[in-house]
Image (cartoon, rainbow, N blue to C red; front, side):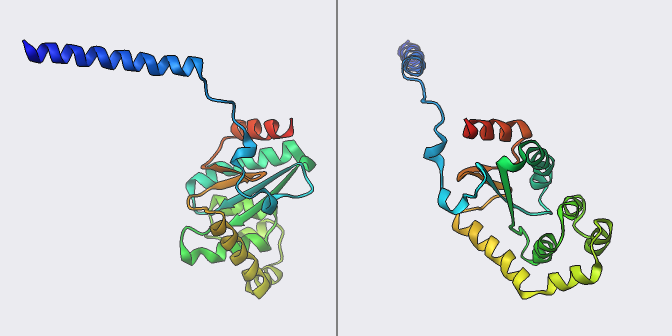
Length: 190
């Protein structure tokens, strides 16, 4: 009889405690999201555009591939209000070549990289790039330096998982949808 009594009291106390916690949420709701409190280092990420979106990506990363169409749509919708800066962060140390290719390519080339990062020269031709110029750019020390600077920048900001975005210094991890990105950008523009 004592065990049943103890279980009953324990259950009643649990229900009472849960009710108290729920009522605290009603009386003391969480404050609205304050994006300025989430800024990591906005001075590193600012540009002349009202919105700076810095993206750390890898062309072999499935969530990064999922993010790309939304980013392209965001860039088209916001135009000059948005500066999109992409940095390559290889998930595989041997994949540095993809970052070099992205720096030497154009927007059309980048979209091909997300489709299949194995056909670098074929995609360069499809994107209207001259193969000699493209290969020369990939072998250039300044191109390598630019890619390595992006990787270092991501490490300094604590980028560990991909994709990671910074919208005016606010960290967004994972493949955010178009509507999620639009909501963040619109709230920043207000």
